Length: 176
Image 1 (tube, rainbow, N blue to C red):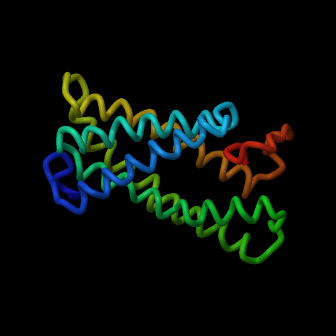
Image 2: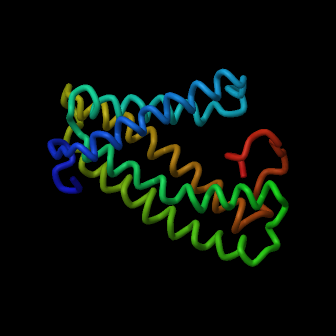
């Protein structure tokens, strides 16, 4: 699936993409129903783009390999969630937090940045065509921007706290 991103297909990969699309639908509905759209608009944009990409794999059975590859980002979410929970608990002085911030960098690189670069390089071959690949390239480029913005926020917050903007959004953790 890493090589044949467009044509590779397996039942387990297909079911993983279906399950993930269902998660994004559920999480989007939860944000809307709980009236957290203003505080979570970045999540909503991300979810809509992800659903658009996953639906290509579900309905056209195309680019399932790409969908599976994009799910590697979820590995880094374990450490990002641990970081967020420690920030909420004001536990930034713990050794675990200090270790986790370096683990976060490594995981972010290997499971977010590296797969995005690989996928972007692959999808650039569709630039200028009017195909599903071009649609997915546009989504991917927008996600690339979001991932880079999140990475800069992570770096600023954990490694340059004196440069982090002073205005705090208590209902929004993406700013930290």
